[in-house]
Image (cartoon, rainbow, N blue to C red):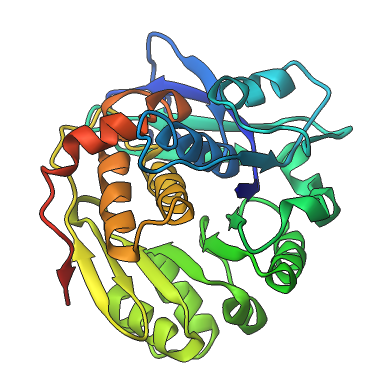
Amino acid sequence: MIVVFGSLNVDIITKVDHLPVPGETVLCPSYVMVPGGKGSNQACAAARAAKGDPALPSDRIAMVGATGYDDFGPQATALLAEAGVDLSAMARVPHPTACALIWVDARGENSIVVASGANLHISADQVPASFLGPKTTLLLQMEVPAEQNWAVIERARAAGSRIVLNVAPAAPVPETALKAVDVLVVNEIEASMVAKEVGIAAGTARDCARALADRFGLTVIVTLGGAGAAAFTRDGAWAVEALKVTPVDTTGAGDAFVGVLAQGLDAGLDLPEAVRRASVGAALACLTLGCQSSYVTGDQIRARLDELPPPRPI
């Protein structure tokens, strides 16, 4: 079982010729409004990845988060429900459903502002005890109050669950959490921030990841955009290339990577192959505007997997 504890948004996306600079107004012809939020995105990516590939099933994927009583609430969960995600532990709170304002330029690059709303009122107590156990993969991000993340991590560790923490957006992670987490997923900026906060001397993102893995005995995965990803443990390290695509919108790629990674690990893949599969899922998510609507199924990932060489020890 995969339990995603995290954020849900409604994303309002505009396509612009270029991203505005301070004081500039940029016109565009239209916008789209779709479900988003890192937690919701990752749950949707995991659920999609679990479909269509009978060799890699995940029996249940649940989303734990909060939305408001406004019209955005049902919109925020619509694609999760469609993907078969368990929403029984969701809460509705007297605060607006979170909203993300996203600009995407002609190259597929983006700028994002998130109004957190209901995401700030999620509670660790929402996670039923029955959701946590040795067969559970708990997946978290950093768009909800950090203290609630640490509380759920403590419960999950006591229950023997696998814990995957995506430190996005970049934020400090206490040593107590790093000692409890099994898999840490970071980009280059996030790797440096997490390392610096625990007194690891600055270096490249790979240097930081290797040092974190050695000190805390966890798996650290660094996403490197078009350069792929690298995974580090105390016992070894691997590099994985990125699938070559022409991006339309890169907004949801990072969340696709994390969701597909968690689903692969939950289904029993070893670490290097789970990272390789996640790299393909992330690339394919760049081919369509939006986040959840761009995520692909397990059979679609398998169809492109041979285009990537095997993970390379480093």
